[in-house]
Image (cartoon, rainbow, N blue to C red; front, side, top):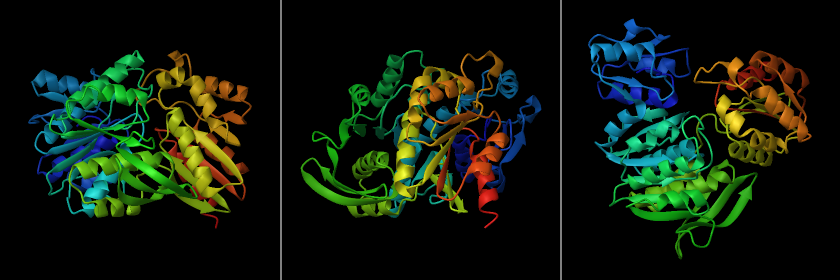
Length: 452
């Protein structure tokens, strides 16, 4: 498995190992979760070299982030070893089970993990692969004894078109992945293809408040049920009550009240995620009581508004948000939950192309923040930073134009030292991004919590 350090890849590796498959893999650097793989008997090498591909390998699986000219992929092809992408592997696993695939620009990991936890509460014991880790469900993947396979269905590289699930969900559709989709219409079309691949006897769940999700859902041959707060949605959240940003609400299916949900995780966006999970679980036959219990006890996934520590009156929270909509939702949820005196955001842009295409939207995302610090772009696909037209410095210029206090510091080490020297009692620090900005959160925790 080339690029085995990705959350989905290492999750799939664990499932394969538990099935009795001999698994090895490589990644360009050490990664979180390496120890878990080794404990499962997976051999992992750091760096990519042709000789690391076993001579007797039956199959080589590549992460979507691995370039086609990778030396290990070239060695496998030269030997005649089949090479497939990660999503194709998941599609093969799904063909053997009742597939549940959750797609959308935002909320995939959380909603997928919600479904896993609900199914476990109901003793359905699903197999699952999620693109994020959750201590509550035992990591990012597990081999279950039940018939269901629950997966996060990512649109990057059109990966989700490898799935033919019995149950699918489209949470939302926004502009993203500009290196794959030259035009927004192509992205919507891909979601439409995904909708069309849900089994005709199955169920597609769609966000009633998202125009483009509805357009995509029109391509489905399956039964379509919508969710949202609007009166025409099949699954509706009614009588919303908020406590420090955590929501309780009644769920109606058409005109019938089905259950009351009390979420333990904060954020208005998680009401939508929960409604999608309710609709999918109900469609798969999970009892309402188990759905309500599962959502009430669901504690979230890693790097989604994750509390890292509190010391000297400073609260440090880490989040995966790497799109303007996600940034705004997370800031709002964190401020409602923690009610800070002052809010810091350390935002690490993810991918040059995303930063370039959404530059103004990113700049508009920090209006409710007191202090913003931006390090260099994290580019997982190894582009040459010197040749990129837009990066962190340009983003900072746009944020300055919005009247927000912001500073550009290239390295995470510089960021950590800067923030640590200025934070005071009552401050909230949010580290945000899909790269390794969590290292700043860890560094700050070591400083402010270690001294308590």
